[in-house]
Length: 457
Ligand SMILES: Cc1cc2nc3c(=O)[nH]c(=O)nc-3n(C[C@H](O)[C@H](O)[C@H](O)COP(=O)(O)OP(=O)(O)OC[C@H]3O[C@@H](n4cnc5c(N)ncnc54)[C@H](O)[C@@H]3O)c2cc1C
Image (cartoon, protein in one colour):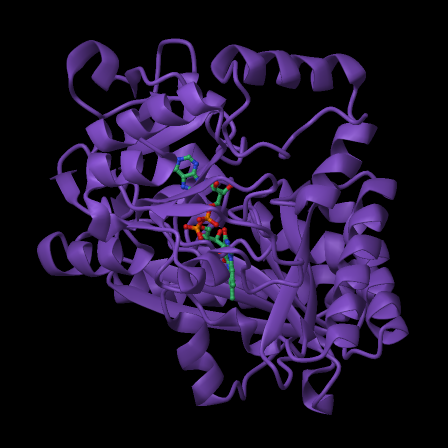
């Protein structure tokens, strides 16, 4: 049997495609990266089907690229060496919600919106940390790329919220990772060697995650937003430090945009939540008081006349902070995402404006404070998808931002293939070789999303 027929034999022909239309869609994403070849698209419906596809791929030496929502914007799910795209969206069951131990066990294709609405309906006292990504993106894809959501400033990265996983190794073995491996129950990740780490941040190069156990958190009844504005770029590290020092906020992001003029300031957006009205009022009062003292009372000002439409956007879960992006005709958008320590933000702020202007764009930023240790600094670039020169300019701007990030000692988050090459080149050689050894041990034939995290030639 050829590959197509073998795939049809595994999933049924309704869930396999080598049609041009599907190949076209899966050969690109919404970012600025160029399209690449896709040979087959397959949608498995069970862990056994995933297993059979990986055994087939291993036997035939054909590449497999796992795909969740496909929305990283850095083409991580567009195969670099052709082969099979394994779209996980059919595996979309929420298998268990343990209310008392606060975790959800879900299949890999469950979307952010599906989990959020399920919890709202059946477990209204619990929530998960939701990224500000399109609602169709998967909870698993987000956790696997070390994403962040509206609870990240309080509880950590979404990958830190993983309790365990069911995975299929490239060679076909099915494993449970975390407490389920020992007890059958999915309530904790340790205390055994941290195997989920072999799948987090690896961009699908070590195997396919089929189930995820995710921590859930209390869902407070009341929420509010306080916003401060400032024009002092050099004071950003101190303001972030002081506002996170309080340890009372739920979410915290910085936005700015050069146009319209009223947006051309630094806005610190602090989302507060509470179980009691008095608690919320107290938190709001404390934030205003503390912010008012920063820099002897001169650094930030409270924004008392926040437009109601903005208030609603900010208080949405997830917040619609991307109000600050300079969306253009043609709808293209990609950001270079730097993970920076706070003291590097002023330099990045200035450089981002310089890069945007050099490419004829309006500078716009959304930066989420991740934990009280680092920030996701998004260099945002929009472009007209119908204009090749505009796409090239965005690609170039992303590349310049990535290089700058590494130059100042930052990390590139979910970088496209070229960005990964820059990271691997800069990495301690022994660490880069360790990554290579682990990949080879887990995927001896090199079929899993090849081209990612490869040693520089
Ligand atoms: C407007 C906008 C706003 C955004 N805001 C945020 C934000 O606030 N926070 C944030 O974290 N992100 C954000 N993102 C980035 C991205 O959309 C999200 O991180 C998203 O959750 C990624 O999930 P996905 O399902 O699209 O992953 P995919 O793109 O499908 O996959 C990501 C990577 O994981 C691998 N993978 C996926 N599923 C599996 C699996 N089952 N097994 C093994 N490997 C797998 C893929 O091969 C790929 O390498 C935003 C994007 C946009 C467009």
